[in-house]
Length: 413
Image (cartoon, rainbow, N blue to C red; front, side):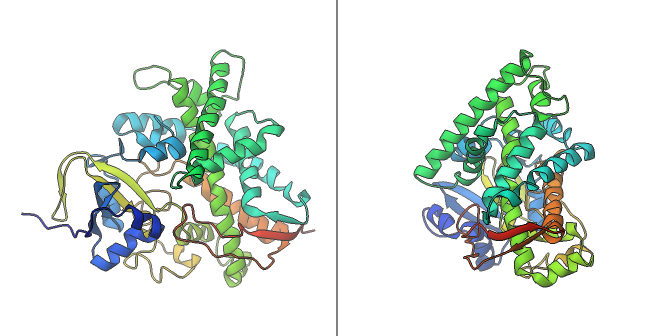
């Protein structure tokens, strides 16, 4: 007889999840004094996990599958249907390598040159800028060119807004969610037309770009991917890159709110990478990851029946007192002696980045944010006027209320 999983009382806790957001799992782990508990969400039994050991078992491909784990509303907005996030086993590994083939140092350096070029335009945008909005356009223009996706000047606003809606609308209700579904449909039609043109040789992107690689990628059976799947996967390059605007916002916010740490970066006492890693650990990004039990198994004395939906606490694991000293203090120096693990630091998922379900673009995220630190500590002078910089742990994604307004932006001589 195995151990009994602590169980949350009540018929359904979906409303509680929406009310508590990023802290839903962490709050109950604390109250149960357990890294595992059972809840009910959308009428379904759910096992919730947190902590390093839980993350390690959660990313064991022999125990968990991603098939049918993500809610349909996320497939209709955030992920798209048939994308790499929903695959498992050799099929996932084969598709993941399609993404990883783009993540060479040379290719990432090329993306950084493009983002730098776009950042160079922002000082011409007037007396005041809203950093979150500007960052999205910067990233959208750069990643489209990097990916081989033609983006006409008159389309920048529309297509950037579509990417924003894809990652902002998935947990929303009412009109915002419907806007997200509309944006998903529009964006997929846009990319599918390009795939047709690539395959008919009417559009000839560079061979080292996502549009080219994905259009001609063959599955394990040797067949080209369906056009609609290629569109989903190209958007799985564009959308997450634009979503880095959330981290851009928090990076510049941290430079403002922790001036002593900013000075340490400027003096070289704290590296840009250490600062970026602490931004990714400290601020909210993804609340949880979802999977289903692949086959019955037992872990730590607890039974996991086949098919059970399971959530891993990403935010809570990054603030776990058993892993991090004073986790609610912003301290990049903690990464100087960090014993790197794919399971104790999981802001964009955990596990192996090359073959597992960890975000393929993690190295891109770190590189882009390191560039942002360089720009906003050395190349740009600016003022942060009085504004509401508070952010909610309920809204997903969580953003400072003002989206960070900057004034008097000038380039240092």
